[in-house]
Amino acid sequence: MNAKFIIFALSLLSFFAQASNEKAYQPTEADYSEGEKWVWKYKGVTPSNEIRAQGTDTKQIVSENGALSMLTAKGSTLLKVLTKPNNSKTSRYYWPLYVGKTWVFEEHWESEDGTKGSTIQNAKVVSFKDEKVEAGTYKAYTIEYTGKITNSRGYSADTQDIHLYAPTLKTFIKLTQRQKGYLYVEELIEYTN
Image 1 (cartoon, rainbow, N blue to C red):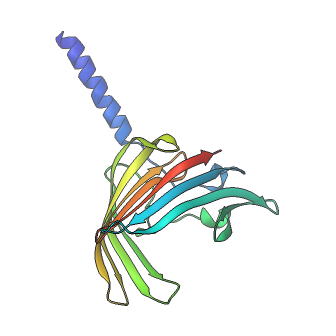
Image 2: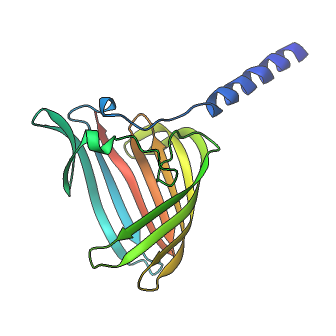
């Protein structure tokens, strides 16, 4: 019985060692195919249950003049532009992703009304496991982001974001954001390959 237990324990250790060594690299243009499509539903709710955002968001791979592009509500962008290697140590996804990796995500932005702002968050990959969303079940990295958002109008708030990133789909399958009681959730509801 002791030999069986030792074999089981070693098998279990081997499984966890192998799972923890998995890495996800930035998708390349060759990873996408024409017709591939992702659809998310999203909803943002205030602490008083007022819905501030609700709808769907779609991205699709299309061929334009012989080149693949990603089509969104804002227009299309060539995949060779979107998949240009990103080696920034402060990007949303600092490649490669693996359990235990940490970095600082930093984004400086300007809204349509001219308000300038910054989002600075500590990021950590906490797990890689099956995650179920409306579109199905996929192996995904859970990435936790905690930090602060500020803007030029004096707004400042602590933030907590959780991204479930599925390497086989080359995108997040769920994202949850909390900011001063405001809750925003975006979840993949359809994937077509």
